[in-house]
Length: 219
Image (cartoon, rainbow, N blue to C red; front, side, top):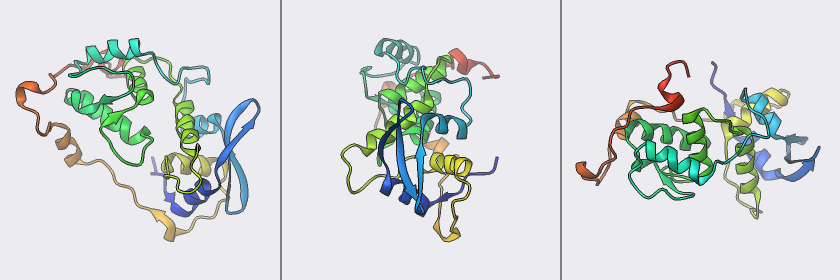
């Protein structure tokens, strides 16, 4: 697939003018880009990202009991709390899985070690192939960021937003001088996943084979 090109001015325009609104009995984001009024809904995210087999009624978070049971099976080496799961407490395969989820779906401007409850819920849902409303979670994260932030807004999900804008508003002008560079995972990323800095060998998380849907080569 052709990588999505991110245009900084379009993303900045969107967040500069973004605000809560309500339409058709749902919470949406209204904004203005290049003087054009636009809005973003949960279904827009689902359609542009081509997320199939998902409905708005699917859960956006799983219970702590469900999460605890799954992380115990992953041999998570540490206290299993309701809201802060550390990727460094997982064996290499699951640590890498958590790393990808945090980078793709994380909703903070810094820090890639901790999974908040929505992300650990997503990890469990993907592991066990359980229904989960990914689109709703993404929208919730964006709406959450707009609360009380009148001035500086972190440019959350720029690639997802450009996919939506390319799909829904193809008439937007694209300035090639505004293309935002993207860093990609490489072999060094994989090497880092094997490291547990400052953790003695006998205290490192044990290896755990893949289970659930992850064990299927067709998943």
